[in-house]
Image 1 (tube, helix red, strand yellow):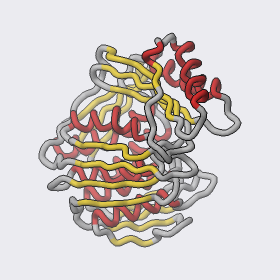
Image 2 (cartoon, rainbow, N blue to C red):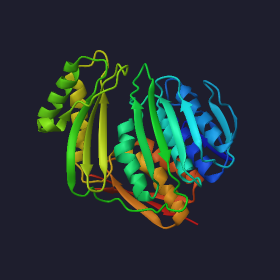
Image 3 (cartoon, rainbow, N blue to C red):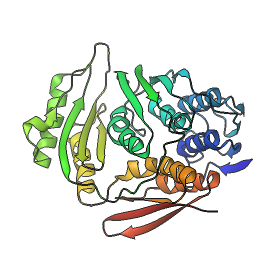
Image 4 (cartoon, rainbow, N blue to C red):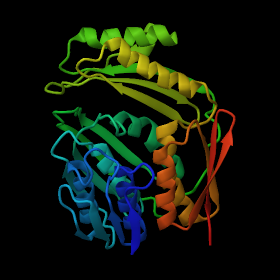
Length: 346
C-alpha cells in the first residue's frame, strides 16, 4: 500500500488524479491523506469524486472514503477493463480532468475503449477540450497511443452541460518513448473566441485587441460557430502550431473583467512562450510527464523534453509518479527554460 500526503507540493487535485491513474496502470493500491489540503475548500469535490468513481468502475476497485468533503481515500484497484463507459460530473466541474485520469489506464488495456463524458469542457484550472485535442493527443499518438476526440457540446462554468466523446485505442504493445527537444519550424498561429449566448461584440473586442498586440492578421482571428443552447461562456484561445508540437493558451472572460484585460492576459502567456525556444509550455510540461514515464517504464531507456517553466504542479507530479513507477525525473536549468529527462531505474 503506497501512502501519500495530499498536502505536499501544490497540494491540490493533481495528486489524486495522478495517483488514481498510476494505481490503475500498475495495480498498486494507495492511501491518500489530507486531500487537497492547500485549497480553500479541502477534500473531495464533485469532479474529484467523479474521477474516483470512474477509476473504480474501470478497474473494479475497492474504495473507501469516496464521499463529498472526504480528506482520506483508500483505493485498491483490480484489472482494468476496456469497454464503453459514460460518466458525468453533473455540474460545471471539468470532464476533461476525468478523461485525463482514465486515459493512461485505458490506453494500456488490451482493446479500444469508448467514453462519453459530461460536465465542463472549458474551465479555469483545467485543460480545455481544444488543448487535449490539439496539444496532448497528438503527442500521445507519437508515443504510440492513438485516440479520437469529438466535442459534442461546449460546457462552461457555472452551467456546465458540455459533452465529449472519446475513443482510446490500445497502446499495450506500441508505447515507445521519444525525445521532444525542439519545436521545429512554425506552421501557423491563430486565435479563437468561444462566446456562446453572449453579444457578438464581446468576441470581436477580445480578438481585435489580441490581434493588435501580437501583430496578427484578420484571418488569424476567428469566431467558430457554436451550437444552440450552449453557454453562456467566454473562452479566448491562442494556438501556436509547430512541426513537432502545438501549444494552446486560454483565458476566460467573466463578469466585471473587461475584454481588454482578458486579451492582455492571453498576450502575456503567448509572449512568455515565444520568448523561449523550449518545446513545451508550463501546462503541457506537467501533463506530458505521466504518459512519457509510462512509456519509459514499459519499454526501458529514457525520454527527454524541454519546457519553458517547471511549475509546482509539474514537480509535484514528478514526485507522485516516482512513488508508483521505477523511474527518476532529472531536471536541468537551461537558458530560457528547463530540460526534463525521465529514466528507468532498477
